[in-house]
Image (cartoon, rainbow, N blue to C red; front, side):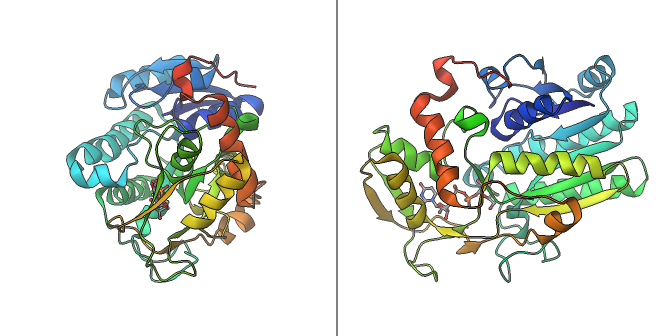
Length: 334
Ligand code: UFG
């Protein structure tokens, strides 16, 4: 199938492009390279463009015979979204609107959309089931939820079949540790701990040690990027017969910040300096997924259930590419 991957040069998008290619599909990457890396997509077709440019999206769809779209292109930093909500609404909501207009103009009906556990805000209970109330507590979560609602109403017209996949904490590196996380600036826990292990930062800061969890630090559900991508392929298959699919994607098991730090220490064999600091605003104590729906309806199985192999794949990427994609190393698709 010819699949346009918006944001396909980013962390999760590039792993998706590689998986699509391995599975015999023809991905075309649509990315403005504001965050993504050309080196992450090997020889995949790249159209450098912005989603706001609806005509260019239409041209790309027509020229490449696109039959389905996966949409990863978004801003993802919670803290930044609070500082600059309008940028987030523009990129995450307005540009999703622009993409939907392009799909409508070209009669492309299938869309797989990257959503997030941040749509739930501070959940009433964990593990989180898809039907729990959505009360996002920051513009990032709010913009993803607003986009989901737009997809819902567009699907009700019969012109769109979509899957909204709510990721928990995406991490690890695909292709045997060769296609990993390279955000600038980096704010995610696992790459930050690894940077501390590599001596690229003085320490790792724990944001809060007084949460109501067994060791006082926040618990999250870490899910390997390739497991996430496999769910996208399954969802795409199911859009042949379904109009609206919504799934949580997580392992269902939680690890505390301290447990993640200990795992990186074990995997890397390095000493890591830890500094305990104040809570980061907006962090729920525990976020874990009830992903039963994806497992039963899609037949989704995760290959990385435990944290250690996930961290090992991330360590492989960062220790091999200490400057990320900045060292110019192109990662082939296979
Ligand atoms: N943390 C630290 N120190 C750090 C960085 C993070 O202690 O230097 C803690 C955070 O407070 C949090 C945990 O590590 O408790 C994980 O933090 P991340 O920033 O890696 O991830 P989040 O859980 O905040 O958010 C991630 C994605 C969001 C997504 C969310 C869904 O970044 O896009 O998962 O669960 F919405």
